[in-house]
Length: 132
Image: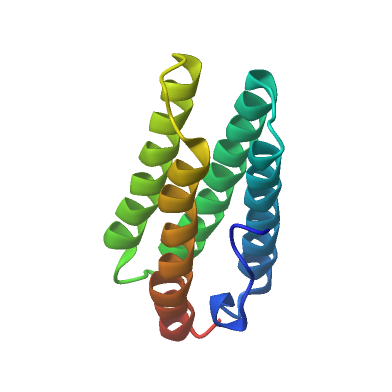
């Protein structure tokens, strides 16, 4: 079962951003499926690293668009990005330290809920405000 189901309300109308959002959702769902299938520690570490790298790159794209257009809520939007990256780093650190951690629950909280809310609020406002 997918962790995040893509919904039309996640679309910003910015083709590059929407494409990357879909790819990130697919990657996160692959990680979730691997966790449910009992992935090895190395597989989980690789997936977490890939998720972190791809989300970081995506945020850089969004932040470039916001700066280019003088987006009025840039600082707040960027802070929301940093919060998710911090949460993912915490998960990665706990995994590397062999700390007892339910990665499915952590990802569900840190990623699914964040993405759903972020897409529907901050990214929707970004698109509406910039009209692109």
